[in-house]
Amino acid sequence: MTSPWRTLTLLLALCSFGCFRNHGIDDVDSGPAADAGRDAAFPDAPGCYFGDIAFANELTCPEEAFVGDTVEVRFEHSSGGCCSTGSATVRAVADGPNRTRLEGDWVTCDCCELCDCIGPFQTDALAIGPLAAGTHTVVVAGTSCTIEVRNETRTCTPMAPDTVRAPRVLFEGQPMAFSLVQTDAFGCDCDPTLRRVPEDAFTAELCDCCELCMCVDPGYEVAYLGPRIETPPTVIDDTTLPTEYRDLASCRPVSPTGLRVEPPHERVLRDGPAIWWAVVSGVDTVCCTEPYGGVREALVGEVGQRLELYSCHQEDCDCVGSPRPFEAWYPLGELAPGGYLFHAGEHELSFMVP
Image (cartoon, rainbow, N blue to C red; front, side, top):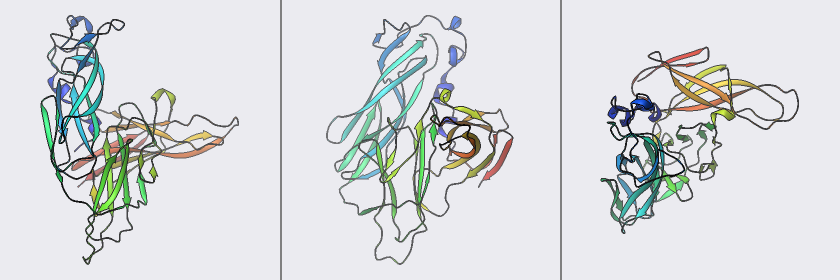
């Protein structure tokens, strides 16, 4: 499975030559603006409309949970029209003891009544819970999924991660990603579990370990790759990720001095995606602060992907400074078997995924 931000969405598949702007042709061919099924127009923003979620796909729920759990559901949705730009705020509404309805308020602009496409799309994740025993149903725009909630109490202990991987900076459109690994394992047949908890935090636990079994697990990993939490920092128990949300304009491009790839850990018991990471190194001149930055990915036709490095530190002392090296971690996501080629400045790296 390729990284979600490098995958063409259903929008591109459905768009035809009737679409306009970022959908395919110029404004002069777009036809008259229409409400595209929206409820109301914004008088101070001509061509923009307010509406609900009209179309949803890729709704995913965990197949199983335990009483009292808070779980995360993820879905892709649209206002249902063919619009050039738009965004939505979403929420989960209890629609009964074992039923949750996902709702959203869309604002879309530059819509075309006669164009044959749906978009833009947005992907969101919402926390639902605590859950009661039984079959819990989640619905959105005619699409549904179910969660079997077991009336059992799990025995869990907190993970003690010794390795944390996460980006230092996220630019617009980049999803949140992290992986935590505990290599010092003493349990047997434990189930590593990453759960969402209130206030946009996570908890990582080792559950249902076999106390009487004669084995030692090889290690554990929990990972996440999906929509960002609303307000950083991201907290996983006693671990606080250093990730910041930044505008690209607030950072400075720098020339990469190195490029390497870190594969997911092998032989560990895992919950979540097996994330591959690109690590781009660079140098920036600083005086009394540590340099740090982020990576942006750009397509390079059929010859691989280009990774662009940016330095993002802002406050520093008023002095000459000296060159200091830094590294920026960038999630490539779960990679399908095959060959891959990446560029970062003058550096090129090819590798195979078995």
